[in-house]
Amino acid sequence: MFRFRQSSLDSPRLLDSKLYDEQSFYPAFVADIRQASVSIIIESPFISYRRVSYLLPAIRLAADRDVQIVINTRDPIEHDVGMQEQALEAIAELQELGALVLYTTRLHRKLAVIDQSTLWEGSLNVLSQSDSCEIMRRIVSPVMCKELTNFISLQRWYNQVKL
Image (cartoon, rainbow, N blue to C red; front, side, top):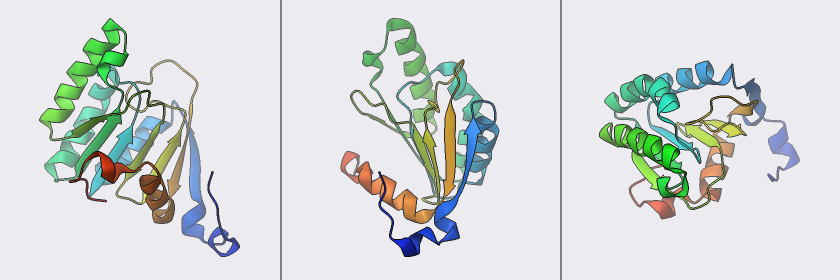
């Protein structure tokens, strides 16, 4: 997926990473949200009210610091009725905090980018995970964050997103 020149492989900033499972992910992710100073981008296909409620206190504090929050998810109409209601309620709360919520049809990516320096990617649905065995890798690398945000073309979705 990524192409590296040999010289970039020697960069410790590019390769600073650690693996997390569904148990260890959330405390580390919340710590990153609490440290965010510029932007939080989360791509999560599904949204449950329970999981968003867990993250809301940290997201609220970030919003109070004027951190730009961008959520990319599936349109709730792509979910069954029970999940639609949860997603709509959670999205409304995120939007009340000033989060920009974008919809991508058939989205399946699970990732987050904090301050264009910390990248989370893996199999865990950040905004809905509840009872599954998952993995996420935390990578501290502005180079990889920039590569990913360029790859997903965030700018084309909304012209006010500042990366």
